[in-house]
Length: 241
Image 1 (cartoon, rainbow, N blue to C red):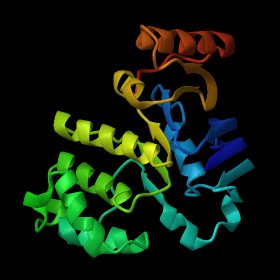
Image 2: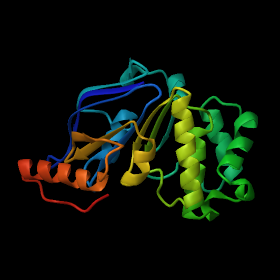
Image 3: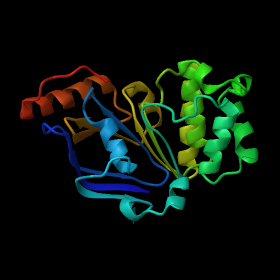
Image 4: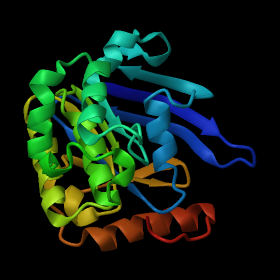
């Protein structure tokens, strides 16, 4: 579903993404974890074509991202950093617009999404008047309501209450069970361990190892993996993200 080979993108000053190889297969949930500034969001942007890789190849549905037809992007659902929504439109209007962009029938998916994400009460409220948590719910509903075959989410748990976290978990597991490929960036190790088939560790713009989702002390294993990489490359330690 998704593959990157030798993906590189360097900012002025030299930091960025270096020679990253990554694959996400159908029916698989892959978690991407790392410290602040590790490059997780930049990598997700590269995999979605929001940034153009300076070297390497990105393929979506076995097609080079540079030649991917627009219609194929309708099969992708994503949320990067902040929900993409029209502030003056209501919750329902935003979900209807998102459904159309993904070639889905709003009459078939929007009511279900409103119910699943407990947004019924806010369906007629303008997006700019919603709380941060409900804005995140709208963004996730928009990303998932059309049943995407590839899901890419950046810190999707941000601002969510426990009920919404449970909904997110169930929705991602459902997408994977139906054959979708799921890639999630997160700093909640305990949460991704519940759903991920693989956990990839990123540090200083590179993938440096994996964690066992069934491991006993994931947090200790994560910090030890990063510490070893920092020591090897003399990288200053950063706060966790």
